[in-house]
Length: 335
Image 1: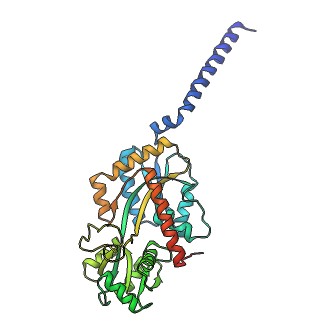
Image 2: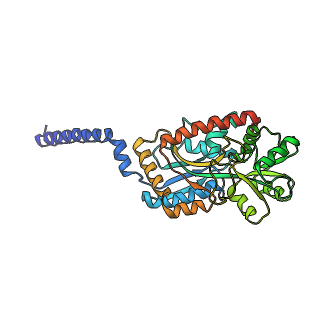
Image 3: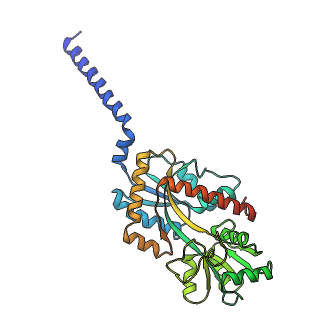
């Protein structure tokens, strides 16, 4: 055999062994190394509802800020349908590399599992929670012609006239519907739920006094409160809203323990490397503290919120228990 060829082969073999050793060492350190380089391409936020809704608006505000923070474009992909389950299923099956995120809600991660007999994904096992990003209060509003202006007056009237008060919602199982069911349960009153195909037609009937009250999302109700067309009775959150500081919470107005919040949070597919999750959480917490981001979110009637993944996971667990009980007691179902 040609000695030069043998020598070259020996050098190639030694080089290959050395390269393999280096590659092996790189694989051992790959999660941290990957996180340091992440993201290496555009990041997609899957929104499980149509464009223009609160979930979409929040995702776009946050995505714009994340684009600067992460150094890669962050785009929104709207995949609406089945109460958020279509988008949730898509995001759950995405590559667990941090380049696909999911804007989840109280519906997708705390209500739907109790509402749907068959779920296309597991809200707990298929996702890694990053942080809540915003809380949106619901506002208990009434038509001015109704004979009550406060929570005690509403409860007294409902008890004296069981089944006479109709409350509208954006649909069976929505947070607006279940806010009313929770009120019925804690206040021990009998009211009739009237579901609509969306919040807008329900508000239209409320403005026409076809229904008496509604536990509507703050962004769509507040304009009618400011114009005097609807009476604000109370907010559903634990604290008063800065947008309506003179309106009490339902709890302080006479229903202790009442709290119902529409919340939104960011998730990654389960199995995403821990260092990537940590980097994403840090980036999200940072952008949510930026004054311009807070201002844009507050203008929607929402409140920015950030926490650790562990805190978010514990919150989701508590919310699932609470809303699961409300769904069961209300008998709500979409199957």
